[in-house]
Length: 306
Image 1 (cartoon, rainbow, N blue to C red):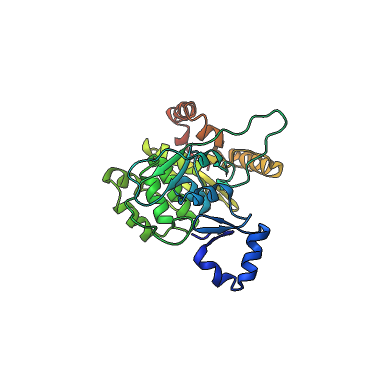
Image 2: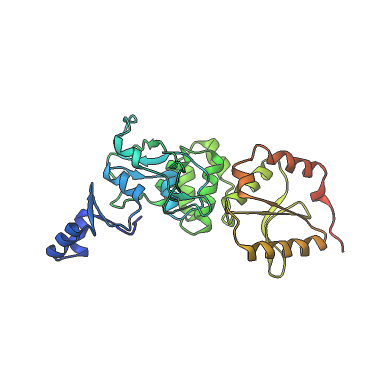
């Protein structure tokens, strides 16, 4: 996958044939060397730090660069050929900071601490060990299939499902590529991931749906219950659940529209609930107990008014 601001060194003459212009760009700081690459200020700093060490991002970090909805994770995931054991982290790794915005799952500039505020904690390097002897291509970020293959051997099944469903939803992964990916995984994980869907709008929705499916609760997703009103999850006959996909909720117009919809649906006999990003990914240890209480009361089995 190509990244703006990152150019493989052998490619530069075809992009800028004039050697005088190339030298001026390097001299003026508009472009600099980073290992096998030339980079401009447009290139993400954390990606550049990896490229300078002849590493490339993978797993969660590469998935974010592919534009996928990325679940909560820790560490900087990287890989390089011929790695049989994790080396001691070089000093440069202390400069690598994750810059994935939890509201969107995309790379974003890290917020600058205010006066007296501590800096964000540094993240450890998580080095993947592919059985590659050479780089698979000349791009700074591996393609989507290798990214997901690394993720499948590193993350929990649910986190991998979140990445795969996001990739299917965004049309960056085909069904054929998915079949090839699953065929190369251990049978147990492959069987679990065989039920991924392409209509999940967020990782929050995927996580909640998977929890319900594991308990054999009947669920439907992206259901159009009224003209112009589509809901994330329909549980049973009448329980509608909406899953917030962002960590922060700062859109007052959307807030009021959501409540208007909820009131309309409640008047029609639906039980309407909402789960926030925080309830699914930060305080999930408490959330299932509430969901189980609602299920045990069979509120999702009530008939709608005629």
